[in-house]
Image (cartoon, rainbow, N blue to C red; front, side, top):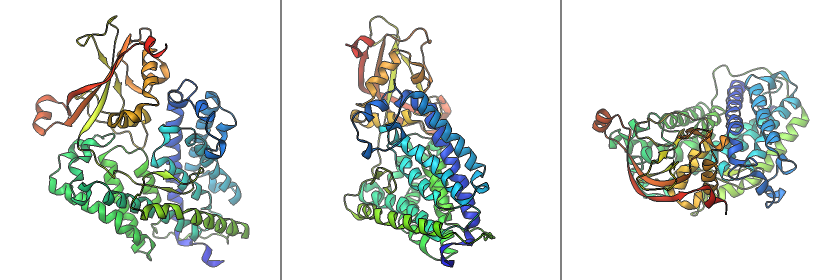
Amino acid sequence: MEWFTAPGYGWSRLVFQRALAGVYLVAFLTTALQFRALIGTRGLLPVERLTARVPFRHAPGIFRLHYSDRFFALCAWAGCSVAAALLAGADSLLPLWAGMLLWLVPWALYLSIVNVGQTWYAFGWESLLLEVGFLAVFLGNDTVAPPVVVLFLLRWVLFRVEFGAGLIKLRGDTCWRRLTCLYHHHETQPMPGPLSWFFHRLPRPLHRAEAAANHVTQLVVPFLLFTPQPVATVAACLMIATQLWLILSGNFSWLNWLTVTLAVSAVRFPGGARPAPAAPLWYEVLVLAVAALLLGLGVRPVRNMLSRRQVMNRSFDPLHLVNTYGAFGTVSRVRHEIVVEGTADPVPREDGDWREYDFKGKPGDPLRAPRQFAPYHLRLDWLMWFAALSPGYAEPWFGTFVERLLENDRATLRLLRRSPFPPDAPPRYVRARLFRYRYTTWRELRETGAWWERTCVREYLPPTRLADRRP
């Protein structure tokens, strides 16, 4: 079938596949370096505790058949290796069927990880990586031209990512309709980056222009993805420019990079036509069958987008084949941070020798400037932001986190930037206090060198010792 392939998108597929492999590599590396403290056997939310109560059909994956920290580490590093091979173009050296199987490996491994990752893996970019990664399996390699149907489905995912995010903003916080949300967003976002302070200090008319441009990019431009070229390419480039702006202004894991990767698939590069043999019949039948399945499953995300009770970042099947997306339907006006401290004093006094634990990414010491971590994902730091919003987000894991600090647990301490206690002398007590953080002004920054000004609001967790955690 001549209509089945689009030879002019050869370069688009190549760039898309290499970029997606890079995102996979970061995702598996993040998992390999952090899983022991988060979901390992002695983690804050152990995998085995989940598998004991959740049926296989609700969260399928290889770790339902066997779990050990060593086996999990092997799978995570195997995912890194396969992603690195794909990044180097290994799939192009294989027959079509073998290249498809190679792309299937990281999807199956990461699906298994996400389905046991619990709250640490409950972010929209996890499902987005799985949905896009599944489509990549059927995109083919140099032995065939890119299938039109898969290219359409990639644009359909990009449409839902952008349009869904735009709708959730219009239906959510009134500041989006008033164009004032960016008065607060750069200061209160989950993990500010090195330029976030400067973005916050931009003139307010520019913030309003940012919000208006965001509405145009998310509510109007997505429809242009389905128009003829070169209009679709222009629309994709506008989305890429918006995502790069977001990359500069904060740390949002690989969400923005993956969205850029999706947009690349809609760009038609000059000279993109690359000669390739006709697609085999089995490949055409398989791709069309998968497309029909995904379009059928996609009814629920569409209904969700059109609903007044639209929800963000939810998967509609255990394989994460179709999902709904969205971000910042509500923007916080005030930033709260949990400051965790320990003391070696035998009796915990308010004026005792309390020493603060430093986290890698979340704000702590007011003198320390925010750093760039994205696309790498600091999972504990992100959850600490949610825990500061409401103790309900912290209930399943925060108590165990404190216990691990009281034990000077090595895996847990590796998630932090610095522990104030030597390895052989853990604290006797740990406490947590809630602080209000605000960016300093230009004058305050020049005079004090501080990026933040903070004020204690209340006690978050009273002084706790190991005996209190272990009756």
